[in-house]
Image 1 (cartoon, rainbow, N blue to C red):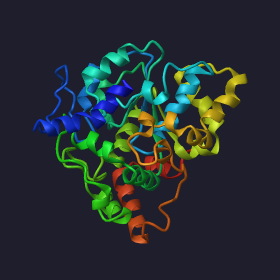
Image 2 (image 1 turned 90 degrees about the vertical axis):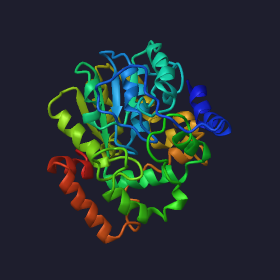
Image 3 (image 1 turned 120 degrees about the vertical axis):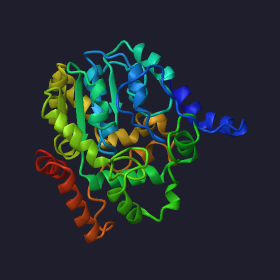
Image 4 (image 1 turned 90 degrees about the horizontal axis):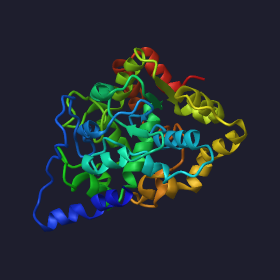
Length: 338
């Protein structure tokens, strides 16, 4: 699967260019009644081709809130010292990322014999037709300002292969994502991120040039109020008490943990250990970012927005959060549970 993904990221765009082909929407293998969420990143229709399993674990985030960290945690909980069949990034794909297409991804997921743990960045209203009341959903949250700063590192370090995969491979819907270097810097991007949605993602009022942070958090928060199979985990809480949060997650997904293995499991999920092994932890071993995996697994710290965002921008963020989120959700995202 990794080799196919890399081919789409690095070879298909140039092949299309050589043969004079423009990117065309990939329509999926099955008809769908689900809301469609498509852009240079997304193809929500890919979930139509994923056969549900009642023991699936779905990791959910808006972005840059601890997604890869949670994948590493779930991997340690499920395998507990046993050799994994591949890297966590390979066996736990982002399903709604539009490359590789469904006809490539779906058979690979169906062939997995271990308990699956998949990833989505879809808002809950879009994901709703695919929601399985028997599966387990782990939503990872983080203060939006911290998520934004991490997103900017992700964006700034993206290389030509990343832009090729997002913009030039077949299936793109809507305009290409602009290059970071064209946008004037982090502070300028923040103003648009806070106040504009991406053009193909109807109704969103933030997240440009990616997708809405606030809608993602709000819709999953509201869904969790109605369904006990959705667990919210905060980035800050994992930093404060990684072992405690890992055991809480294990209990939620119904896995009994061998207490003798807990210290090694926790160590494997520390930022220091993940950064040291970044090329095996990061998606595609970090090939889509300058500097490889260590650019993707970057600092793991909060409040890097202090001194970057102005007082007026911080106030605008707080006002937007108050407008877009339920009060308890806004408080949780800013502070965590502990």
